[in-house]
Structure formats: C-alpha cells, structure tokens
Length: 326
Ligand code: SF4
Ligand code: SF4
Image 1 (tube, helix red, strand yellow):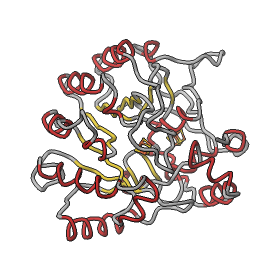
Image 2: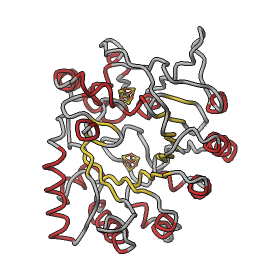
Image 3: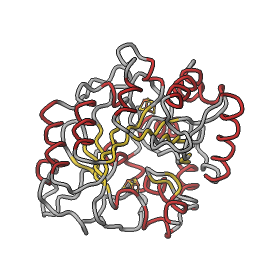
C-alpha cells in the first residue's frame, strides 16, 4: 500500500493548539470483521494489533483521575477486543459518557450475540457507520451483504430503545462519501436518511454525522494509485474554512493506540504522528506519562490531511462543525 505522508507533509496547515481536554479516545486494536474501502485505519480480519490488559488498566487509571467526561472507544471493531466490556463497565461505573464506534455487522458475529443487550444495559452511545441508505452503495464501499446486516443491526438496536423518541439510548449514524468528494450538507442528508430508513425499514436514529474521507491509509493509497490524490487534496484545501479551526476534535481529545501511545487524534495515530511531548526531544508520549500532566496549550501536529476536518461544513468526530458550534 502506498504511503501518503510524503505528500501530506509538504502542504502547510494553519497552526493550532490544544484546548481543555474532555474526551479520551481509545483505539483498542485494528482487527475488524470488515475491510472497507475508505477505512482510515486499514482495519481488517487479519490485523493482529490488540490492546493488552495492562494498557487497558492504564486507560482506567487515567479515567479514574476524573480529567475527561467521555470515553470514546474505536478500532477496528472495538468490541472484538477482550477488554472492551471491562473498559465500558468500569467507565460507566465512574459516571462517564461512553461512545462505541460500532460497525453494526459486529452485532451478528458469532460470540457477539449478547453485544446489543450489553451496550443497552450500560447506556453506551452508539456511533454507527452507514455510508448510504441505498444497498448498492453500502455494499460497494463496505462489502457484500453489509447493507442487510446493518439494517438488521439498526432494527435490533431500535427494538432495545436506541434512537427512539423519549429514550436515553443514543444512536447516531455516520455518513461518508463514496469517493473523493465532499459530503453534502449534513442537515438535508439527515432528513433524507430519516425519511428513507424510516419508510422502508422502520428505522429511527438520533443524528447523522457527515464526514469527509481522510486522504490516508487505504483510501489515500487508492487515490494515489488512481492519480486522484492531488485533485482531492486541492478540493479539501479550497473548501477549508478558518472558522472550523476552533472546533476540530483534536483540541479537546487525545487518542490512545493499542500500545498506550498518545496522539492528537485517530488520524494522526494512523499516520504515526505522536502527540507533541512538550520537550526538546521528539519522544513518544505514553498515556501513563500523562496521568497527571497538563497538556492544554500544546501545539497539535498538523499537515495536509487536516483539511479533511476543516473543509466546507467541516468534520469532527461529531460531524459538521458548523452545526456543532451553533
Ligand atoms: S471502516 Fe470501520 S468497519 Fe470498515 S474496516 Fe474500518 S474499522 Fe472496520
Ligand atoms: S486530522 Fe483533524 S483532528 Fe486530527 S490533528 Fe488534524 S485537524 Fe486535528
């Protein structure tokens, strides 16, 4: 797979600094039951990187310090990690909001039959990928049969109360374009999703987040091999809005990898751009180094991929930044 970093680092991005920390995002490993075309993690069934019990213990020690309000768990398919449920239960016990970046098809994987009930019992907020409400588009991007399995997953979550009016079980969906284009306006797309998924399948959900594809990992390599990389970067760069810089997720979040190393965000993790340690040496920072350290004000490691977060309406882990700021 071709590496996009040599190209990304040649293009400047406005300097930004960290704000107040409120979210710990934990990537518990790159193993996944799917191998989606756009995956910025390059996750798949053959990846063996997995967070160990020792690193999960450090995560829990960090959470116990009371410095963040939210634990955001991602992967791969994070639920495949053997420490996933322990992390969730402990974080909920500490009173934290817990988010699970769920691919929906995992709910049907053998051994995960009780996963949906577990998530509902722990009041875990689900952020689920659903790149289209049309079967062909989803299966092309995520694999054959993924659409049907995703619909069944959503219906099961709805049956448990997720996404329903009056329920505190939050179910948000994530849209990303099929190829190298910007996502359409989030509010109109959300209305379309609600109408079509509701009418055809009886599905309800809370919010739709429209995210741009990141020009890194598998998607970036495809762009390079198709000669589309420069055009896509140009598109992102020209759609950049300075106003979005205030709300990019890296200002308030740190991302921890399966080995316990810390990054400004999951994308920087995939590019192997560690958090700025604040010292002279460019040493990697571990979460165990940050248990009591203040990081507010430290510079964020940026490069051209960051235009994926600030293009047009902007993408954060919570979707369009303009809405988020409103
Ligand atoms: S996009 Fe999500 S579901 Fe698809 S391979 Fe990557 S981690 Fe797995
Ligand atoms: S990719 Fe986005 S979230 Fe990550 S450092 Fe750049 S602007 Fe921040």
